[in-house]
Image (cartoon, rainbow, N blue to C red; front, top):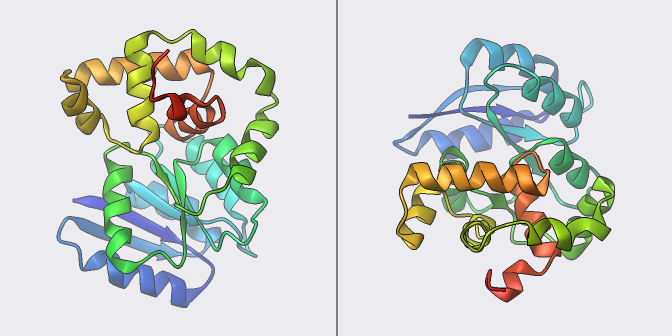
Amino acid sequence: MIRVLIVDDEALIRSGIELILSAAPDIEVVGAVTGARAVAEAERQHPDIVLLDIRMPDMDGLTVLDRMLSKPSPPVVAMLTTFDNDEYVAAALHRGAAGFLLKDTAPDHLALQVRTLAAHGVVLSPKVTSTVVDGYLASARRQPADTGLIETLTDRERAVLVHLADGLSNADIAARLYLGVGTVKDHVSAILAKLQVANRVQAALLAERAGLLDEGGQR
């Protein structure tokens, strides 16, 4: 079972997401709380996935994100947003969020996105724009070095990165490239280290900004 904690300041949003996810046979909602209770609830329930509202009045999502990710063996945290030109999205990705989902995501897609997160895949709303991508990279202040960092990857690592940026899990990448899952994990670790990023989402955004996806991963 995939254990999910929902964090949102609106009771209606919490209830709606809980209702949708609870209908999935492989997902268990272990809590649905406001920001002020989020960190304590995560420590008590040990969820695999946290769906975290990015804007809350009692404790904002960025603060909750920082506190959760500072704990040993932290959960995978994805941000919930209306994506109304939300200036916090880039900041959340920079701080280590595993992606973001829109609050108006179709119900039949929500469980699929949670499964993708649980499989260490990348989850970014289809509505993500170049503004958000560029905003994230600008906040990292490393735009001039983007191409150079990509060029440090081997051909195999570049191929893994392209599939990673497409949102595939390690198992899916292994199947596509005829590799073992452990080998893919090793490649992903090397990619994150070489690109100097904290997680797969940041690596995916860097690959997109550097044009690697347009190239299909080829030199």
